[in-house]
Image (cartoon, rainbow, N blue to C red; front, top):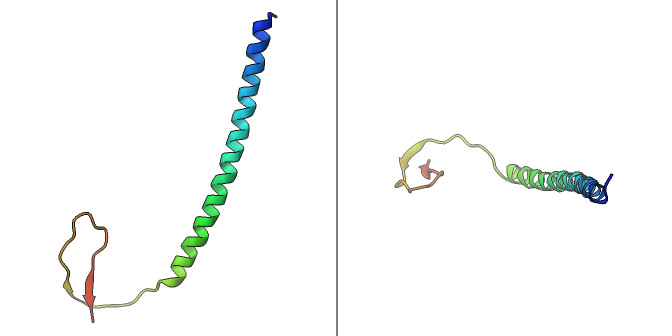
Length: 73
């Protein structure tokens, strides 16, 4: 085996080890972010509640809005 072949094999092994380590770090960071977001979402859900309402009129439509505002009685 030539010296350059050994260097190429060593570089390939290093690249593989770095890739596997980076994937592990990515999984750990992703799990931490998911856990913190789920905690935040649970707290938001605890502050909201459903009500039964009667719509008596609609507000003017806003462009690019995913929320519809209505007056209720």
